[in-house]
Image (cartoon, rainbow, N blue to C red; front, side):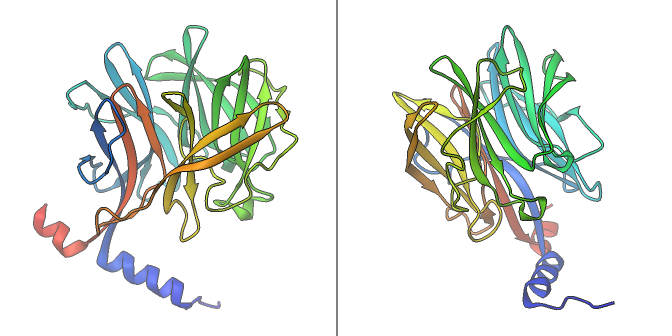
Length: 296
């Protein structure tokens, strides 16, 4: 058997031996988007798991932070939720959705008085829709919006009377995690009749093709978070200002670029979430194991 001893593999083995690596959450409250992430407070999972891909639902004066929870040795992730109040008091994470395949990026949206979720299920080659039975803990499968597709980080937007589906699609599964941005539209979100945009792929650039969170409005501006995968998967993210969005046209420009430069321990950040007064991002921490043990 041939053993891969390339410099990249040797470096990764060395890093894992010397450093604790873990995706965690960082959060802050404020009426406006903070100018810096340096003052964000941590939400640190137990050492045997990580939390990533935060998506927020703000309801009844509380914040529900849906995340991918990945346990060491499990080989796949599931969806969990953390419930937080307006003062930052947070309950323990609770598992809410698990399947035989990997789940991540839990995009949750409200429609017709209920909640729905589109978690990433690319390892099953589907864009699957789940309906909430008891918010936020019980969900049931509703339908596949698409099948036989290598799609990641699907994100919905209601705009100008249509539902828009932004998703990262790879030409083949081996190309993941890198993907190109594709856009589809439909008259309602619970359908298989998604119409592809004539300009697909809208973005075929690893710097900002892959979605990185819910689209949100900052005043009159509509912003689309996207991942920068140039240096590594999920190295950073951008907020892109959408200039034109119609069934025949699309244009955007970069409004803000965020890279992991505010803390020497942070090696990557790839998801942005904001609802109400709460902003949450994820961050990949790489810390010396000796220092972490000493401080534990």
